Every structure is written in structure tokens, then in C-alpha cells.
Amino acid sequence: MIKSFFAAAVLCSGFSAFAATNLVTDGSFESAVLPDGTYGYYSADQLYGWTAPAGESIEVRHDIAGSAEDGDYFVELDSSPSTPNSSMSTTIATTAGQTYSLSFWYSNRPASPDFNLTGAPGIAPA
Image (tube, rainbow, N blue to C red; front, top):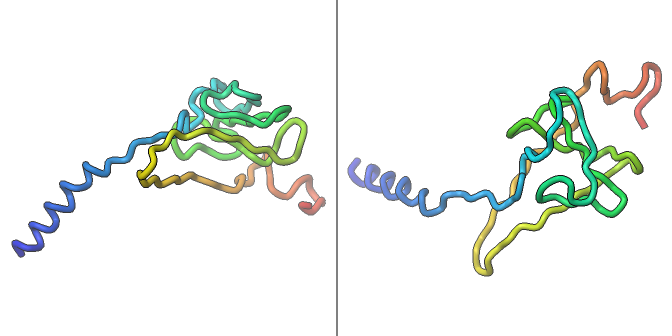
């Protein structure tokens, strides 16, 4: 029992040495300012820390056809004003010899009365 307690104490004390620091700038897209239930397009460097390809934009949503995992906003990558798919990028500062873990939340667009996955009634999805 003492050995188990000692092992648990050592493991717990070690966690603070490996405390996670978020290196992604505005990873929850909170620099966007949108009314609830709306979305907006951000081009080039309009969204703090993120970049859209030239001529493209990043679609940020605020509680419309889904909800954010963290914060109020999330990005949809399957639509853009000029193309059916979009992309975005950011730069993360790293240090040689360090180990990093990158994680993200991904979800299909949930079906809703206004934005559904099946298209108009009687039309099959492409």
C-alpha cells in the first residue's frame, strides 16, 4: 500500500512538469465577432493568428449548424464564397528537441431545419 501511495504521489507531482501550454494563436477563433446564430467570412489575415489562401476566406460560425467545442466560435471548412472547399493555416512556434502534441476537434455538420446534409427535399446528396 505504501508503494502504491508513493508511486501515485510521484506520478501526480510529475504532471505539473508536463503542464500543457497552448501554442496555437486563437485556436478557438474567438477574435471573430459575430452575433449569435450567424456566420462570417474572414480573408487573408483578418482572423487573428490564421491565414486563408489568396482569394479564399475562412468561414467562422457562431452557434449555427453546430456548436463550438471550446469558446463561442468554430470554423467550417466545406464552404467558401468562391469554392466548395476551403483551407486555412497558422504557424506554431516550436523549439528543437521538444515534443509536442497537436489535437483538434472535428465534426460533420449536424442536420438542422435550415442547414441539412441531404439538400433540398427529393434531391439526393452529391
